Figure 1 (cartoon, rainbow, N blue to C red):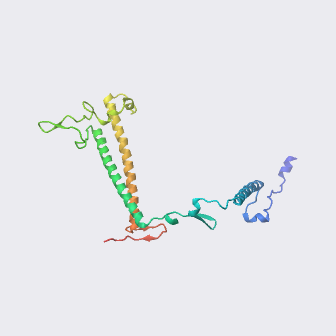
Figure 2: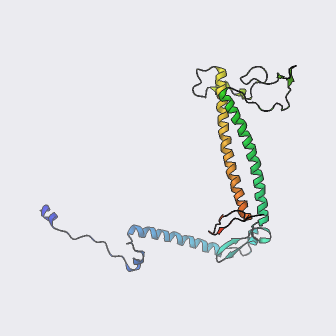
Figure 3: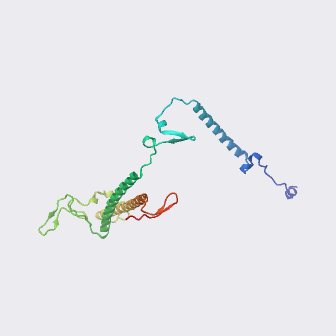
Length: 247
């Protein structure tokens, strides 16, 4: 009997028609959709009721200093900035001066970083080939010259020895074991490997800093050039401007 019932074609199931007042939305509203819409409507009603009550209880004599620099236009609160309630937009001459100061600062810091990077780079190369690359003699230290004119004493050996020692000798021995592959090396070799790794990390950080400073300097210089009209390009409105040839 069930087989005969299943072989008979049944009537196709059809959804109920969309109500006329909801046809403009295009989709048939289910009960779950109505529940969400009704809940949102009730929340908005409660908010409107609360705001209306606060507006009724507002004190007409209330004052705060923000009222002196703000007003309402078309239901939107607009605040005023700057001196005498004027806009806080700076003059073009002031902005150009600020850009000039930014360029000077970035150039100074970039030069310092470049010199430091070159110095550390020489130390890394010297450590790789086993040659100590020292800077100019001086710095307030005592230098003793022999009869032949050569400087004797007062200088530290690159691999340790008498005197003050290398500036990297302050590393603790327990930190030297952090370098992989140095367990079979002697203590001086481990110290040398540790100092070399520290120099390489410092060189990498200086290279990244130099690249970031160069990018920032280039961006500020382009902004100054656009303000002076000395370069070509496209402004924010899509209008193209040509290069201004200065004599």
